[in-house]
Image 1 (tube, rainbow, N blue to C red):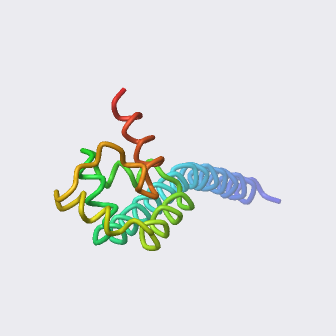
Image 2 (tube, helix red, strand yellow; image 1 turned 30 degrees about the horizontal axis):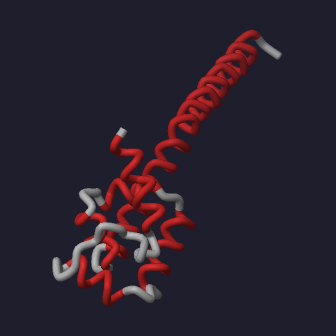
Length: 125
């Protein structure tokens, strides 16, 4: 092998090593960005799903943000919360409270009271 061929081979190896390092850096930043984008999309989807439900109005009545509620619950917890709201046995009581026809000193009738209470306590302090 001539000196020129060896120099060319060494140059190729250096370029390859630099490209591998660049790929490692890109991958190192791409994975967290991908996760953040996926979480953002998941939260937006959950907000769209919950917006027409009484759950959103219940959160507002109690001074809480839907975005904060959705962000603080995991996927399965959100699924359980939306299912509980859809299949609620206390819809008449809920609507009466939300429309201001009845007072709610105790929100125990709400199927999602525990998760709402947890968020309320977490944001309070």
